[in-house]
Length: 172
Image (cartoon, rainbow, N blue to C red):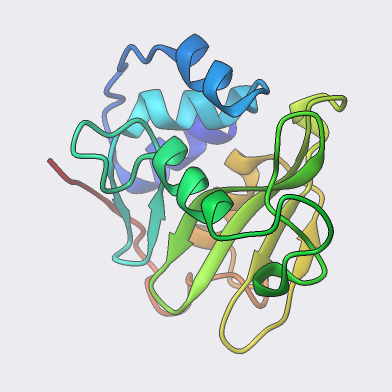
């Protein structure tokens, strides 16, 4: 439902990409939220409203979810809190932690607070940006993206006042 609403708001014809989620989830050590997978399959690599870039499977590896997660993971401690993500830490298989799924142009980072023991549909979104601190939001990835793009009352996350006509620009 939310992905269709995003496509409608951005006047995007769904790409219907086929993505090998099994290999990606195997590398991560957990399944990913179904609506995120649908978002990636519908839009592919690109940018929403010159602001929001969703990490996906990327042949260039520039916006590749697994590569970016591994970069964050390689820079952090194996146990305990990570000073770069305090009070959180990066997800490691079998543990609870952050998996990055998008970033925004104004120093905004978007993560899931993931745990292999929890159903991904229940993972909260954790975000940090300039000027707001870490915040947890309990909603699906699709709803979050839709509200960032279209809901001017979705503060401090919304860009709807700045970009009242949301769009999507594919990137090769």
